[in-house]
Length: 95
Image (cartoon, rainbow, N blue to C red; front, top):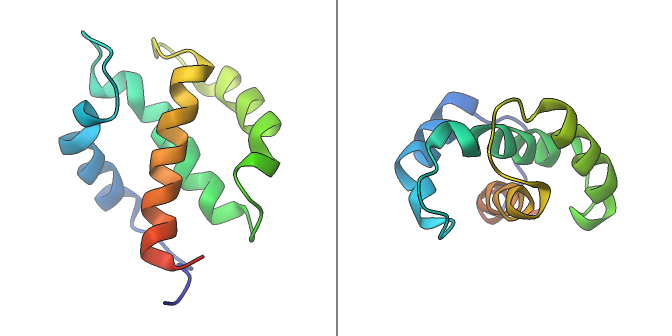
């Protein structure tokens, strides 16, 4: 498999709009609560240049705290969402 050099962010976010409910057992959350973590995971995958997600965890945590906006996910919840977005790209790109 080839690694992904470019992703269609809108296509990825569209996928997650229809699948976000399966990521967590948190009741009452909307897609808008998940979107900042999804975007962070997608962006981290593309900018990671072969680094692992665990190698980037501290900077991702700091970035999430700055960019989460009104999301009701704390970092522990968001981390699993970031991981899911990363894994989806990783599975498709073969990194």
